[in-house]
Length: 101
Image 1 (cartoon, rainbow, N blue to C red):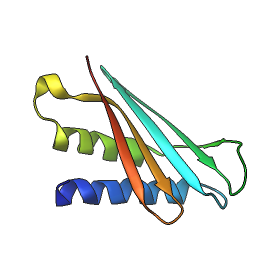
Image 2: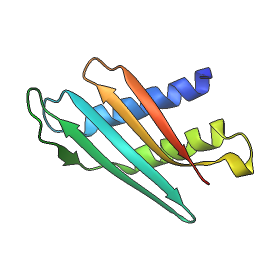
Image 3: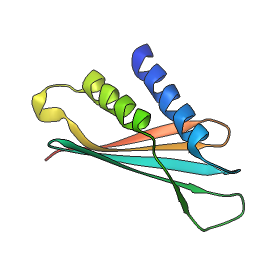
Image 4: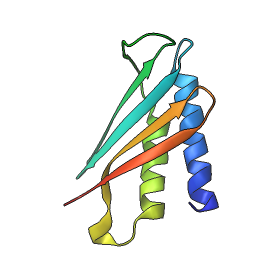
């Protein structure tokens, strides 16, 4: 991952942390890109609880994902259409991409 991509991921992670209103163990945001539309959903789980809760995804997260998408695209045919950013309470994270067919 390039330093710029890593910086964008760190910013996305911080935005997620800031958006969750209570203590949590794992959180994730899924962003989908469709022509002219970006949609995002945020979820988290609390400690020792299997229930999943949602949180409001702020527009800054969508903009950061859009910048990340442009940064790491290979060519016009290789744009990813969906990304899931998962972060743990210790701030470790992973990002999974689904590419357009």
